[in-house]
Length: 349
Image (tube, rainbow, N blue to C red; front, side, top):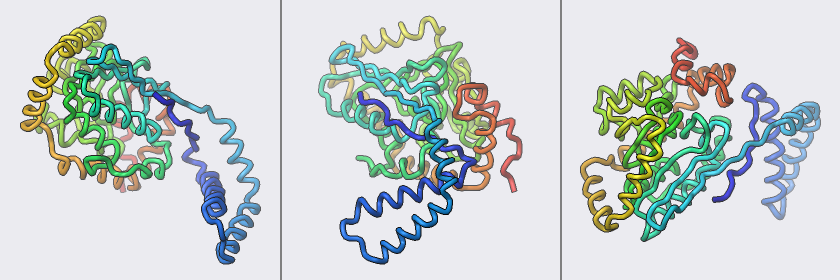
């Protein structure tokens, strides 16, 4: 699979530097996309240049920030263990944060699962220690997330891929070792089966603790697995759920001792891969009729997530998390449930 597109990370507090960057982007777009530039556009562009020159010291600061950033890259890796049995591994160090750069990769994999007439089972796992797949990339520019067209289902890109994974004739299994937080939990919920490391798996929908609304379908999927009361506990409590509790609630199929997880999942996947493809697909289709939410139930969740991002309460709570080390290796990412609970009334009016 292709590597994740390198992205630049701008400190949230440096609002002026970001504005200067957007100014230069606007200039580039003006002169590269318009072959014949009307005089009014020229005047506008000149005014922008003048403003930029007035703030040249800020642009130097902006450039220094860019040059000092550590570029991070990773991949979502596809391995065909056989024609019938595939593995998909999240390898986006250091935290397996999922962002716009990863959407084309996952889209390619989901499309392959839909179109290949031999594959019967796929297992999702992680190569990053301590993290299965975590939350969305809150350092990505909003326009990067907004650039993707609606998917085949008519949903936005991420919920579209998860809905298609659930409906694909291929059996999907999440093998959870480490944190499955936000997007990671949502991908696990969209998978057909979930198996967790008893000692090392942590699942959570942490978003409400940051004044956000989850956007990848957990309100539609989780109650069907664990019941309404426990779903509300997970979603509104916004706390970490360990492997044993996840099994007790039905959040996962089973939690297994960590040293048995890989062998168990591999044996189950290989067993399924030997069965008749049509029988697998037809059985799954009939189960789907009685268990999967409709696209209409999922669609409002992404819209609510995007709307919640712009609210002052979410901005205040995310800012507080960033100040404590959010998006960086360390205690906030390792114990996100604890840290959103420790924010108290930050952001409340």
